[in-house]
Length: 375
Image (cartoon, rainbow, N blue to C red):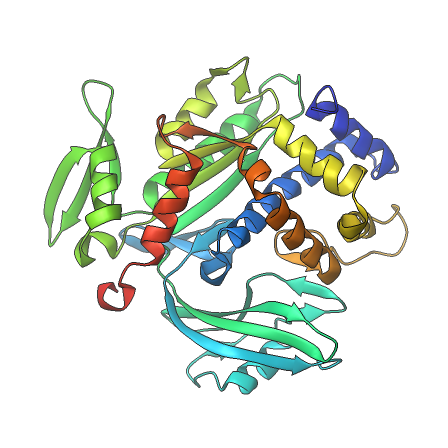
């Protein structure tokens, strides 16, 4: 790693970008959390999942639809794909204009969102919703004459969910925030899928799911694999794969030993990935500290999002949901050119024998299910 620790990079950010803030290191820590979410989103795009991805959508608890939780990312079955359309240059890309262009069905309640507003793209831009679906627009490419757009109508059911967690500053003592974040993540992971976890008398995990009121119980890992690979409509209809991405810098993972909070998350998520300090540092150095010319737009968007305190407030152009369009294009290019390296930024915590390639296979398998006849 080009720096001794991620804490050193956090200190640099706190001095160079947030030096005028009352708590500059805390502000830099929040920015690190944004980087993690950004990495995960553009990794999903590189894996070909952008057409299925929604951002910060409500995810219902199994059996209690009135209780929902907003999670970073959810992956959904595709109900319909609208042919690529172009919104002419200098014409606002509002939800209403996009909906008219593709002749979106009247039953959709349109939002007030804009896909591109003052040069800032809204990733996974929701243009309309119904009781059972959501219409999402995404830019394909921006040309000299306008913006080419894809629109995907997704089912409200999420076959996978992804949450990102980061706490604390390296070397700090573990505190209540660390514990609460672990509990929050564990609760959502364990309550939003029809395949539920049960601790058995040997300390292992069994799974239980119901079909027409009848309970089926077995080793959790075995049932999970069976549902993903061979599950029928009744098994898949309310199944949601849970994926957690953590990066903790001394709080949840210390000297290669999992402490309590990491163990809680590892047994709660179906897949738990650890974004290493080395990986996060490479992202910061490559795109924010010493970017090549073709990636400088990323740094410029990040800096522009945090103007000096007391000055004019700027629109945030560097989040998982909102990204300056030149930075968006540069991030796509960076992830395409460096995907092998980026995938090595992640360690698989659980399942113990799993690999990132296994997870990619699972997401493709779930995406390609015959959802029209399942839901």
